[in-house]
Length: 325
Image 1 (cartoon, rainbow, N blue to C red):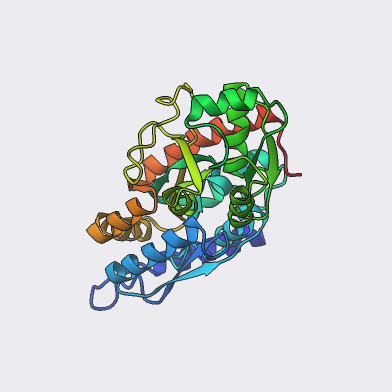
Image 2: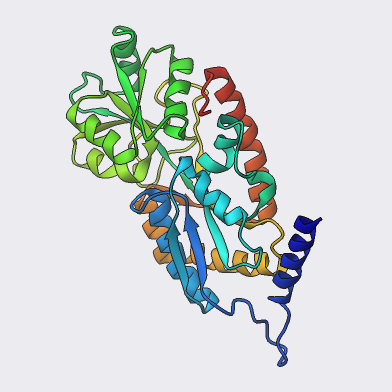
């Protein structure tokens, strides 16, 4: 009963936040907004959040402050936002991992992304890039798969941790290509890349931004992008299908979400600010340089993406037997 009363009080307060002032002017936003990133500084989510915060602040007329709340594969940050007041002043830079993958990895999630958070807009689709150490004698994906099959159980792929999209992408490659690459989990993308460069692991399949500089310098070799279309920032790198591996698409994305119960007018105001930010030529250019595709879209379209991806990842996770409990 008390929880229901408190929830009702919170909703009443949040609706009051968007009521017009005595002069007929909407008061939202009336104070700074915080944008929570569920990962450590420096990663692709953090980079996007800071670019977005700057543009949204211009459009909303109030500061948008990025806060990093990392831990538990993104669950800590997501839970923090889910438990925050639904008033539009605490936002989540949501990514596919915590939103659509973790519910199938954890039997006791601290929150339920599909019901405790509300979608505002899809922001970008990230390209996942297949890369190998440049010393590996394979010039393309077909050659690498053949090389891996001739060395069963002796090659490895790294990831930022067990249950991450990069880990599951590697397991999917084993399934689709019939390889036996061993998974080596790390505590973050940085350490995994360091060992890949040193030759301690063979390959990675991860978001393009942190891998791109090493491909451009020749230290890593790009085999394919795990998407339906080539990346604008690397037009010479084929898709997995073009490279000879059918039915291999691993989508990744980032979006903006708020606590469930946030009033519709607030969500609409935020949606407009996001749409304006993504339409900025400077923003578009920077995102493409980072290996991301600006997307946008309505809250309903984002909700559908979440539903579809949750089901897809659940099936893959079940087939691999991966769990984090």
